[in-house]
Amino acid sequence: MGTAATVARTRPSVQTLLGGRAVLRTKPRSPLDWVAVIRRGLPAAAVDALTGSLRLTQTELAAAVGVSERTLSRRKSQGTLNSDESAKLVRLARAAERSAEVFEGLDVALDWLKTPNASLGAVTPLSLFDTDIGAETVLDTLGRIEHGVFA
Image 1 (cartoon, rainbow, N blue to C red):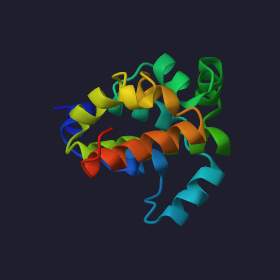
Image 2 (spheres, one colour):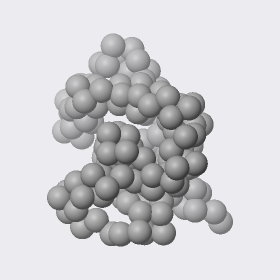
Image 3 (tube, rainbow, N blue to C red):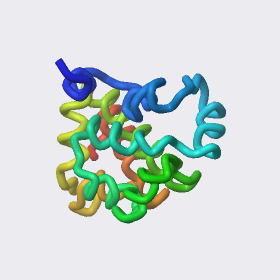
Image 4 (spheres, one colour):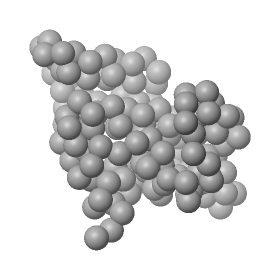
């Protein structure tokens, strides 16, 4: 059974979604550890790991994080994302992790992230991660769902 299939049935961590220790070359244990990883720049292999984990195309991932496909391709050849691009990938991975917690599994979480939502203006939650405010709104909606408030 492949890694993507294993990730799909579980509630994966941010680290797992981004390729684990093999890709990140470290094991961040706290939010402050992630700051250092982001500042250093994620390895470009994290792009492929996240697209596989979230079952997205590179086009979908690029749109979700607000980075052009061409830039992602260029970073793959360079080997490292810059800190802004890294922060956007980590933000999406954190939201996927949170969604998997709320929906008790990544499969249901991915369905929710990819389905238009009335409380989000009839757009998909995934389409809002290109901005901080959009991402915060999605996370707020997840909190409301978790607490049984109409969302």
